[in-house]
Length: 286
Image (cartoon, rainbow, N blue to C red):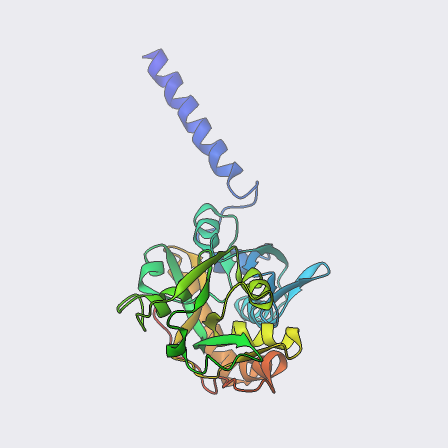
């Protein structure tokens, strides 16, 4: 009896210790919304290699997604600035980072899909992008997405964009016989395109527009988007309270013109790019 009681005490102590260690010793919260309201530091995952969306320059990243994250968190905090730690989140590690608590939320060109909903609760979408194609400026052989048949396209780790070209529905779109070339991320894809190691980079038009702008005219975007990519704010699976608060914040930011201002700030004037004019309908937080 004494031994069983001692074991129970030790088990309880270990469990309490485990809870205290969760999050590096930070307070435990039932939801991210509660943490924000309590003034806790929020860890935000963004891209660090995508111009105009999330690009690391100096101590912090900058871009449209970064500004959206700041604006949404400020709404969640009732108009107060929120302390943020930025964490690079590549396409390949967004789900693991949310699941293991490395980040509190992800705002990183994160398209909402049915497959990802199995692992992530999404707030939003906050904007809709469209998959398009970027080629070298002097390339006259590729004028439509269908012209990618027989061409070399980039396959960025963790991204599903290549499937829209090579696979049939429901996961794909065009079902073309194209060759995929592996890359760690889209910045590497663009390097390979510039080095003539592939023929095209195909992904969301906002991503391509940022790279085209950075390249100073070496590439061109076709301006023929053929999918709707609903950019969501990734949250830990099951955090519906924060999801609902995020949806309220996104709607307000569209209603007061903030989202349109941010889109113009980062993407205004880019040839062939059609920016969203209205708020996309929320997906729901079930």
